[in-house]
Amino acid sequence: MARGHVLLEGPPGTAKTLLGRATAYVLGADFNRVQFTPDTTPTELVGENVMRAGEMKFVSGTIFTNVLLADEINRTPPRTQAALLEAMSERSVTVEGRVHRLPDPFLVIATQNPFEQEGVFPLPESNLDRFLFKIYIDYTDLEHEVDMLRLPHTGVTPDMLGEIMPLLGIVGLDKARLELDATIVPEEVARYVVGVARKTRVIPGMMLGASSRAAIHLMSATKANARLEGRDTVTTDDVRAMARYVFPHRLIAEDPDLTPEIALEIALDNPIMSVADEGAATRPFHRP
Image 1 (cartoon, rainbow, N blue to C red):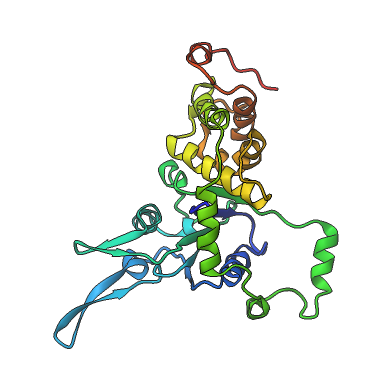
Image 2: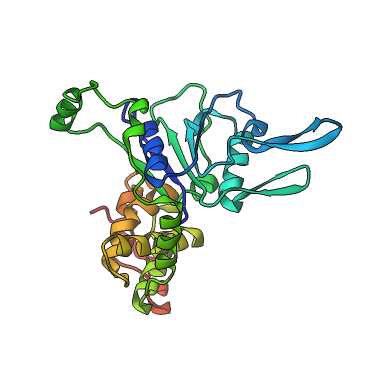
């Protein structure tokens, strides 16, 4: 609904890939998967021009789909990462000077394992900022893990996803997006979103705060949250609920005692709502 992309982070075997596939099935959308390796090239993603029957034809890459699962994005070199992230932002690719539009909707679900150390290429901050959400997927609790073992097929496997019936469909998603665009945003809520973003930039101990893109992403997520709860007007509670998924991966602290999560809580509780607030926002940082 919010027209964004998501980065899933967590240890192996926590169903990150399965979740990406299930999302496509629920939407009734086209799905492609890229298993990134150090050898994955930009051409494999975006496509290339080839000569066929004496005529140059464009052969599209795996990125031409509705839902793209970019598995282990931090295992591929920066050049290939850049090709994907540019497409995420522009929703198009350029090959030999010609622009090719991507299908609509276009959703990238990227995964990465934070525990891998060898042969990885961490995403730079500017690229992380392109993801609407970064969600950490941890191991499930004991009871749910036991329940998984009791399933008839001893777990959930990709071949079982065919049993999932589409709940929304592309037409339904288009309608939901129109409703999101019509969501009412009170002035005080818009100012609160901007105030939280601006506060993250001036907290002592912060190296990099939330960008203007981050504020736009937060507003989109906030409107989606309100609609999913059956409301046509957003509140500051929606902002607080969504900020924990939208902001932390964009924040960088130079103070080792100041985590992105702590900085976000400070900003949510003390947003910059006026010029006077901004002038007074240089108080020393104290860890809660």
